[in-house]
Every structure is written in C-alpha cells, then in structure tokens.
Amino acid sequence: MKRRLSRTEYRFVEKLLYDYKAFGSAILQLENETASLTERMTDSDNDIKAGASIITLEKKDSRSIFDTSKPEKYTIDRDIERKQIERRLKKIRYRLQDLKRWQTGISEARSGLSHMESQFIWLKYDKEKSNISTRLALQKITGSMSESTYFRFKRRVIEKVGKFLGLGEIG
Image (tube, rainbow, N blue to C red):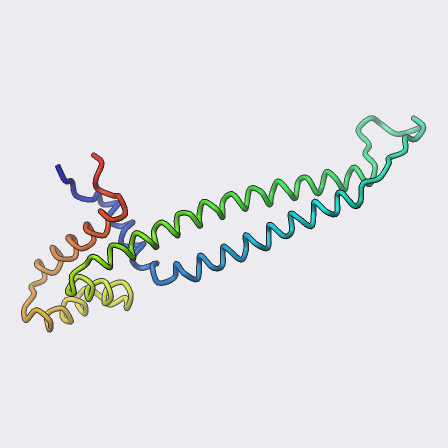
C-alpha cells in the first residue's frame, strides 16, 4: 500500500527542490576543498618524513618525564592536524555523496514529469515564484485551476519526486 509523505519528508523534498539549482556549484566547491585538504595531508606526510631526526637524550637534570622535545611537539601537532583533516574529509565525503544522490534523484524525477508538472517545478522552485503566481501561470496553460486543485496538484508532484528519492515507500 502506497503511503503519503510525512510532513517532514514533504518539507525535505521541497527544500531539495529549492536547493537543486545550487547543487552543481556546491559539489564543485566540496570537491575543490577535498583536493586542497588531501594536498595538505600529503604535504604534512612529506614534512614528517623529511624532518625525521634523531632525538638525543639529555641528562635527567630538571626535566620531567612529561617534557617533550621540539621534534616531538612538532610531530604531535602534525598528528593532531592530520586527524582534524581526516575528520573534515570524512564529513565532506558524506556531504558529497548526499548531494550527488539528491541531484541524480531530482534530475531523474524531473525527466519523468509531464509538461505541466515540469512547468510547475520550474516556476515554483527554480524561479521561486509564490503559490499565487505559480497557480496563475499554470492557469494560463490549463485554462482554469482553483486554489484547492493547485494544492492537490502540488502535493501530487512533490510526492512523485519524493518517490524517486526513495521516500514514502517504507511504512
């Protein structure tokens, strides 16, 4: 049995439709950041390998066992930086995966829509027209569209897009 999208899912699909036009640039920006961070991590690895030195042990005068030498501090700092970069890269990869999945899903959903549904998506989400403006523009195509018919149509289109994204199927 087919179920309707929950309010949260409905709003999520609407947000994705509004954001769809910016997915390409967001993906490009995240890919550039990934390349930059990967390069920083590689440079960090090369610095540590090139900067490896022999640490001479000093006499046990006033040093405690918690004192570290400059090379050790440098290595510790580089290790902390590397872990921060790895965490950021992991977050970016998850975000990229989501954006690409959503972009593909919405693109496929839009290719399967009727002319009227495509016009609705273009007006409402690409051009960000109000409900009234969108309804009046669609009314010129159909000849007549009441407010209640418009909102039923809107719900049906959003649910259709949600289905392509895998929402509303489980439950």
